[in-house]
Length: 234
Image (cartoon, rainbow, N blue to C red; front, side, top):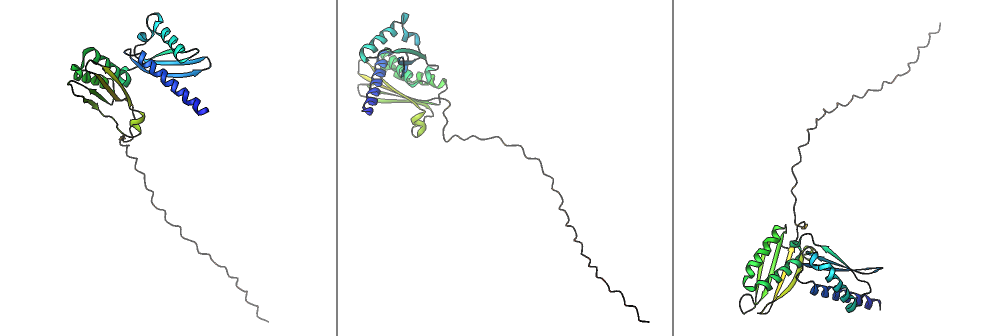
């Protein structure tokens, strides 16, 4: 019973995150985190443009709060907006930016969009980036285009834990186009990094002392008691 309760809570959290992702589309939404507190559920929304998330006089936040209460039966949801420091290093924001640009300008300029986004991410200090755009681009047959620059880990613990990945889609007249982004942020410690230390100064020469001569052992002199000569008898 306890396991089912935990699974139901996780499913509910995933549904809330998915709903917020769909609601906050094209506003620089990065991720959503749900924290349970004694006063109620606290929802932290990470976005690059908090003003668009909040809306005019907080209209978007009020609508979102009412929908969460009605749809997911949350008693007292508290929504908090956190600003992303560097949007160019967030894979989800970069993927959504590419998708919204494709929907705005069409798929004919997908190469320029891919190269421009890749250059912005590398200028922000990323170690490597990979962008995959798949779909009917630009012809009627589906293809997959890959844009990459820098160094990006594809396997191992570093690729699973430290490489940021995201995927989204853009809806065009020709059909749906998928967008996948993988970014290796700066400061990632790789196991094969080798640091060459500077040469240490040579140590000062140590003066060698002359070996000491062994002391000559003194011979023990034995004093033998000599018997006094006996007096001759007179």
